[in-house]
Amino acid sequence: MAGIEIGRYREVARESLDNQTLQRALSGMQQRIGRATAQKYKELPEGPDLRFQAREIRLQTLAGLDVHLERLAERIRGRGGQVFFAQTGEEAVAYCLEVAARHQVRSVVKGKSMVSEEIGLNQALESAGIQATETDLGEYIVQLAGEHPSHIIAPAIHKTREEVGRLFADKLGIAYTDDPAALTQAAREALREKFLTADMGVTGCNLACAETGHITTLSNEGNIRMASTLPRVHVALMGMERIVPNLQDHDILFRLLSRGAAAQNLAGYVSSVGGPAAWDQVDGPEEFHLIVLDNGRSRILADPEFRELLCCIRCGACLNVCPVYGKIGGYAYGHPYPGPIGSVLTPLLSDIGRARDLCFGEALCGACRDACPVNLDIPRMLLALRHKCVQGCANWGVAPGASKQERMLYSLWARAVSNRSLYNKLLKAARWGQKLAPRSGGWLRKLPGPLSGWTASRDLPPMAECSFIEQWKKGKFHPEDHITR
Figure 1 (cartoon, rainbow, N blue to C red):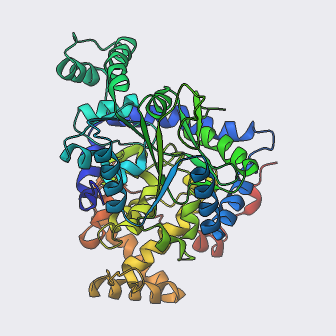
Figure 2 (figure 1 turned 30 degrees about the horizontal axis):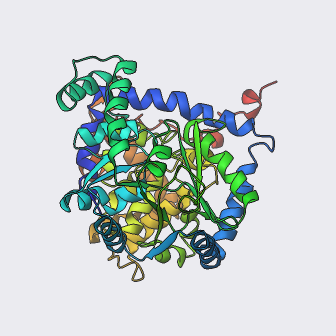
């Protein structure tokens, strides 16, 4: 898995919490886009319930995925395009390099593509002596900085304009400025030359329609359209699940995608590509190649517990509302897919045991499910992954992760909560014990031993001197006092 560094989740998360610039950027994005997405769903002619219809469309599509993919390939090949089904990321990269070698490619311009990040295409092209340039502004910024994207739709969210100004002054040779318009113009001028001289364009694929045999790409900068029409060769990378059977289904998902991604009714630039340029067309590539990538997706498809994960259309809506992502950013996840979706997808595409911190790090609040345009039940899948991490799972090659001490503690806890008398005694002991814990403003500042993790980054309110049930039995609680009249 390209660029994977999933073992540093806790370390990078702690560093991110101390990064005040990142905290302000993430908070601003979530306040601006996260809230607006919910309103955009309400403004749909069909209302927010269209999300549930989209979910059913995705699930039904997955049930006949092989048929839809063959139909898509047949349509594209009928127009002179070429389709390659890659079982692994290595096969996809090898195919790209073979196409590049055959056409003596020396320069590649890339539209935004998460799949290319997943398979490490840029590194492979550079190793082959081919210059690969990201053309999405955010992607271009992080590429110049030698970094990876930290958000699905806002790759450079962690960068301030001052940092971008210094980066452009160093890499592009321009005078320092932190004016966004001037920086955008500088990037535009640098990228225009790349577009005009590139031998090959590489893009992703937001959706593919089996009925018409075309792929759809969305952007707000027009860079994908330039990358797919100016070079003489266009290679599109597509996760095998990014397909819909017909235009009617395509329309529903297409409208939800823009709303989920950026709270827009429609992206600024929408392109549909289904093959090379026809003989009577001025614009367009001489060759069109579509790479359909598996890379572990078939394994997810075969597991009823996680199959719905492939319904995801990679809009990034879950990142825009997730309280965890909103504090730690994208780099803690160590993979191109961050946030709630990455906390499930990364372990399943790589190694559940190594990536266990990702699924344990999420809050299970359900905000991701409410924001998702296809209503993915990410909290359920996170819990399923946690279960496998603790109990082990032979099908996914996961060894039991709980220590003997942990198993013993949870066994004791299970016994306590199933025995009211014992539970009450433990409550009384805990109330007495908390008096020994250090406090700050009346809150518990540090818990002892194995409980210390709860107070490592936050204070906890102390336990009440009298529980609800105890108050009820003593007659101190009167429901009518709490009824709003």
